[in-house]
Image (cartoon, rainbow, N blue to C red):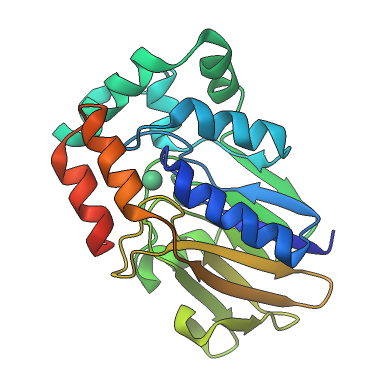
Length: 243
Ligand code: ZN
């Protein structure tokens, strides 16, 4: 494995996914991996599933994916999320539901673990601070753990001096031998870190490089489609703010 594109939390946002896939083509990535939440919130769940299937992305299952295929009760979600999951369920074909059902809850390979939430709670726990990161570092038996769920680009490094926060605005992270990392590529389809552009990442584990990236996409087209589909207005408006 060398040049890998990293996605998470696409949430049925096709224009954002297409912008990121165009960037991947320009970067000539050899593989694409996804930390889950392909669907939920956005109006193009089927098209996003078709896209990931076509590019043979390796994806794990997010909490919205699990709920959309009936594997998680809806009581855990807020009103807008629950509405969108029910809407998503009503539009997916049985093949699309089977695709979501078939996504694994985590993935492990040489040098790498992927979860949606955290290593302690793969579907639900948010890694938002160094304390939560420490709980996952205790379970991480590889140099790198990729996660999503918080929709916030960035992460944490476990160095000799302790756990430090990684600032994604610095762009590139040198993965030091002997250190461990928990990294979130950010959300493609519903960023919540104040930057409305689609978030993604590039990594080259042979060279020990991890790169945080953003790309603009047509937010107006996405907002119009959210409203046209009858999804809650707040799901359209938050896209413009990146919150
Ligand atoms: Zn999500």
